Length: 285
Image (cartoon, rainbow, N blue to C red; front, side, top):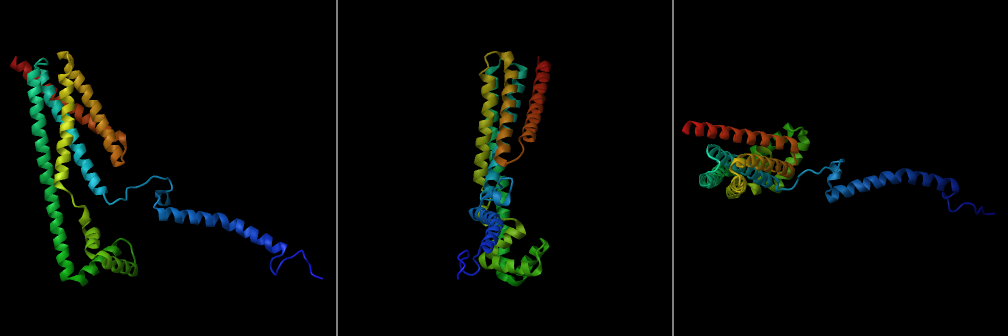
């Protein structure tokens, strides 16, 4: 007589219970592995950063940081230098609107041109150096391929890879992009992300102009001559604080130190020029 309490071989109640326990035990692990694999495939930052804080891994980070550096430097210089100039003139005679305007406009134009020219020369020199290094590396790869390959292996071994792994990595990268691999590991250069002097110059000039306009407007639009300097001080400090917050946010840095640096530097600059203007006004009077 057939026992109908069991199914096919190996499918009795005890076997079913064991499989259920195993499924319950493996299920969560499998789901976690699948979720992790899904995150990695999708490029989710949480796969590498459990806290969920993403890191910039896009290829345009260097270009973005170059723009940010030039922009912040230009805006800060425009605010502080122009504010110091108009405050120094106003310290001699707060009611001399024409003199303050001429000094402010002259400082704005000369400062913007100077910033743009200096940034262009600096970044052009850097770009020329990068191009020369690329040409040198290209020549060495064409002339001494074996030595360059051995050098690449040595560089990866220096980073902690075993000889076998370093050799395999060097083979794969050389087959994919030999020049790019050498530029990246040896020199830290990306051939497709060279610095652009025109972009840096334009960013500096625009940022300086925007920054310089603020203290000029603040001191000229204040109707009471004796209130011009305090109002300008306040507007400039607020502008510097905002510049620090924006730059820290764009760069992913802490806001506090960035704001404090700008406030201290800007405050000291205006105080110094105000003191000079006051001394000159007293001696000239």
